[in-house]
Length: 292
Image (cartoon, rainbow, N blue to C red; front, side, top):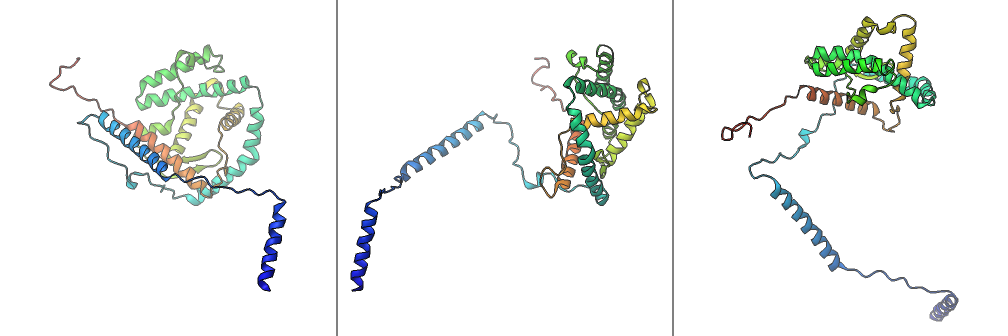
């Protein structure tokens, strides 16, 4: 009797499904042979490319050894004032959000020619600092270029509002007393976060003070003394912030302070390495006369 009930239920189920569309989905046929052949062809092509690269290298040239984890730069940074620096970092973030960003965003709404003129004006004033530092560094060619940029932009460029020196292929190459100290062999020193100014090191902080002292001493057009110096400093700060796209805590990383510290100090070390890099000139072989 129980078996009869099961048969009847099965028949009713078939009857209910008969009025509906019945579609059988088939899986695509498996092609292991074709897949294996394609994989083998890709592997052979890759091996052939590697063999061609090896054949193009000179036989007498030694290949560079592969990189190891020991070759990676260390994430550790000398930061003995970390507590003080983290406090300054949080202060800079709040000040940036409350003051700097609103003012710089309003500044960006000004017409582009005005913003370009302000940017070129402050860049032209900095050429005096570049000239002095390049001279002290012993890089006289760059010093002459900075002097040429200042003369051209101060005259033809109407007080530096226009960068006509770039049209004469005199590219801007800023430097500072921090680079001068590096040229003299001074290490960047401990990491330092300066209020409002941001990431720095002890050496770069000394360089900033020295650069301002130079501009204050030279006092071009009486711009760095008196009440006008305050307005000049505020305008320079707003223009500088408006041209920097960095935003505090925009990365979403809980280790943003550590990341910024590492990237800033690593950039300084790379610049120091490039500044002290010696160009090794190959001597002509004794078998081949020089000049051929």
